[in-house]
Length: 236
Image (cartoon, helix red, strand yellow):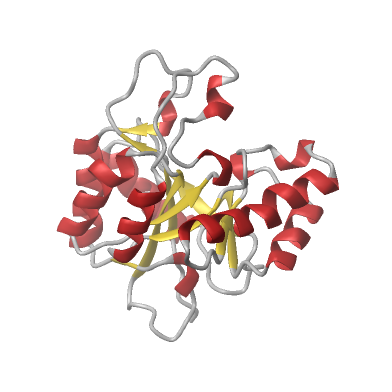
C-alpha cells in the first residue's frame, strides 16, 4: 500500500491581529505548539517537500508548509519546530523579500513583515526548505500567459539569484491555477507544487498538483486531530 502523506498549510504563527481582514491566516503560538506536540506524540516525522516520495521517506511522514515567508516563521515557528526535531517548507514571494505583504495591503489588510534575505539564508542552513510563491503573490488564473510565466518561471530565477541555492518547489497563491500554470511550473523544472485542494498524497497524483490540509486560527486541538483523522479516513 502506498504511503499517504499529509501536507499542512500554515501562514502566520502569531496572535490574531483583530484589525486584519484575514484572521484565518494567523495561528497563535500556543496553539501551534499543541499541533506540533500532537504530531510528535502520534509518531509523525517531518520532511522537506522536495524529498517527497524519495528513498529516505520516514515511516510516518508529514510536510509542514508555510505560505508567504512571514518574519514570524523565523522568530516563532522555527524555534518551535526545532524543539520537536521538525522542519518546515516556506514559500517566498520573490519580489518582496524583507518587505511586507503588499498583496493584502492593497485591499485594506494590515501590513506584516516578510523575512529578509539574510534570515532566509540562515534558516536554509538550519534545515528549512524554501520554494517559490510567485514574484508578487499574483492570482494566476486572472493573469495572461505571459504574466504567468513571469510569476512562475522568473520567480525561481530571482530567488536563486538572491539566495544562492536551488528553488525546486512551488505554491500557487490562493490555490489559483490552470493548465497554463501547471505547464509553466513544469517548464521551470519545479519538482513539486502545492494547491489548496483537500486531501492526502500517495505519489499517484501529478506532483505539480499536490493536496494540502489548511490550518487556521480556529483549528483548535480537537479540530486539528479531526482534520488529520478525516484526511486519512475519508480522503479530504
